[in-house]
Length: 184
Image (tube, rainbow, N blue to C red; front, side):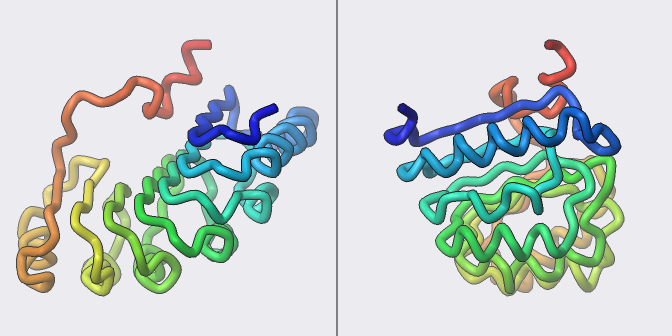
């Protein structure tokens, strides 16, 4: 039924943290949709079950991934990386939690990235600067409004100005906003 689907955006009303009654059905539906979508290249998941519960169902055909989920762990990121070796575009928004020092593992886990969107708050400088190791990265979008312009300039210098760092994003598709599920 959805085998030819190229793009799937799934918005859950809750993050399911501490909601076991809603968790089981959500995981079953999400895993079913993912396993039946062999041609899927673009996946967005907002809120919902913990990533570890469906990571192994993410098709290897995914090149564009958005995860706006709370509680994203290094283990979750590693599981996702194993599933999507050719990932080119990654948007991670783990708010209200944060990646922190685990940001340093992104180049190791997703070496082919061309664009990356993330929150920079709570990321130590040395870990943030490790993003320079992403040789194909063209655009880094910072989702929070930190006052780190010197750090961004340092990163651009380390990449010989190959990397464009964007801190103020233009008007976007409303469905990419994690708050959209609060409307329903």
